[in-house]
Image (tube, rainbow, N blue to C red; front, side, top):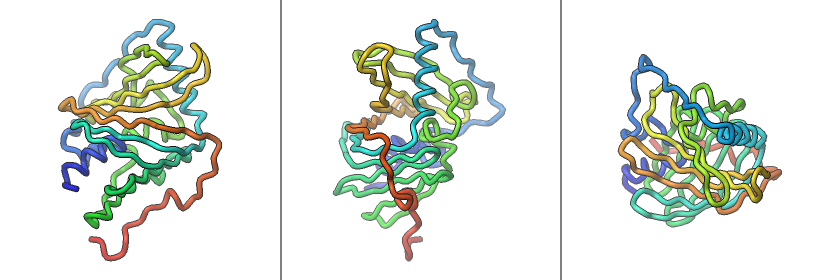
Length: 220
């Protein structure tokens, strides 16, 4: 896997400003983005989504990733909030991406490469944070109805990181219980990578060592 492909892969899951040049880091002196004024129905959706994400504790399942070139990969994932998530890609990629609460670590066994990025600089922190807020560091810029629920488009309020993330929520009945169905990361060049959760089991008990990924011995 080339370094560019690795960055595209990381963009979908970690989207680190230090990893992907397309997500260019801006000066912290840039003015904040103001959140739009939403109608009552859309504001209620934002509140429900925030409460739902805050209530998530553990989960596991299968995921499918489609990058901006249409390439599709799949794998398994595990969640333990706050701060921890693991993605294992099926062969032939066989990559592992782990957020351990502070960092996002990525191991590519084919290239024998290990990369590490601050969790706080990634879209993963949007739903891994201990306290999820859509009116501080991250704000919602769009709310859109879908055939099976709604989606929220969010971005960095401080404009320190270019690009956006769109979260799709599924509700079996209008106003009913929510499920996070997928998310799409769009970079500054408008290239989008989608991660769809093919299955989502809640109230599981993932082992603690799933969220530990150290650099293998002998890897520079």
